[in-house]
Image (cartoon, rainbow, N blue to C red; front, side, top):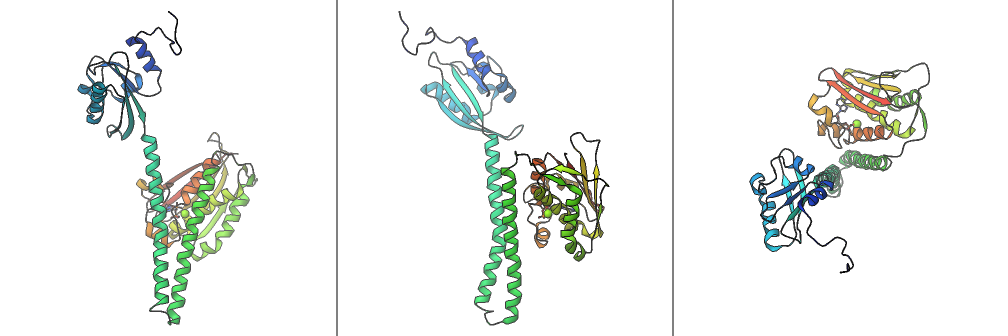
Length: 352
Ligand SMILES: Nc1ncnc2c1ncn2[C@@H]1O[C@H](COP(=O)(O)OP(=O)(O)O)[C@@H](O)[C@H]1O
Ligand SMILES: [Mg+2]
């Protein structure tokens, strides 16, 4: 007898052991069931995912997932492959696409799980982000439309009201513009996330420039901005404009949210105790500080402890997210520590 095209093995059924080895080689959790839906083989990933499953025992005994068990029954009865989505909440929330494929040669079933968790998480993040952006833009826009209507109608001939409203409108438009700038900045940095910067930046000089740029704002808030710089130039590889943005954001936060303390201290110093880093910049204020529960979330987009106060202070809630992304790109690090009532201390580590 000669072998026909496509006839690459001897034509006999795959024995259970070979099938098991095949399942072990898959990169996803895989369970092989016999014709009665008892477990013939469970690869390591599946055993990890379903700790209760054991060989020789019907899957229905160890697994409480009605949709999955119903799909397995359907595959057994009809002989047709089935796909279902499995959503589990214990021990953590996970989603999987489960494919149940009957083998042609004798009623065994191959069940393979493909994780959808990461995809779901990204989708949720995207939806969240769009909702946040829309909300942040809608608030000033609604106010702008309100003032325009007032100026067209009831206040059409009221000179004093017009001047007052126009100045508020200017502020709302500026807020929208700042939000768009921050969003563009964030997406630009994200796009370049994996490209290392090539410029060379004198950090001491940069800090002086940032301080000079914020001097008027600091004086208006009654805050003294102290800089302590080392004698020697501290030069790092980096993108000057991006690093400017980092320190501008941090100084601005210290003045805005920690200004009550009247003093913001910035120290630049070489570090030797932290492998991989050459310099540390600390920005310390003596303001109200931050409750511990908020600290780990401050670099999330739009995370603000008090959204109203941040908006009043022309904040977008994107500042620290931008800072974190820029530092990632520079292989730097950010650490925030704070004691309520005593102030906040932000450390930036920079690689040479
Ligand atoms: N030095 C600080 N002291 C107290 N709270 C701070 C400080 N820096 C940042 N925060 C808090 O972190 C939040 C996020 O900061 P950021 O991302 O820069 O947004 P924004 O400045 O636009 O509000 C701020 O809204 C504020 O609640
Ligand atoms: Mg900020």
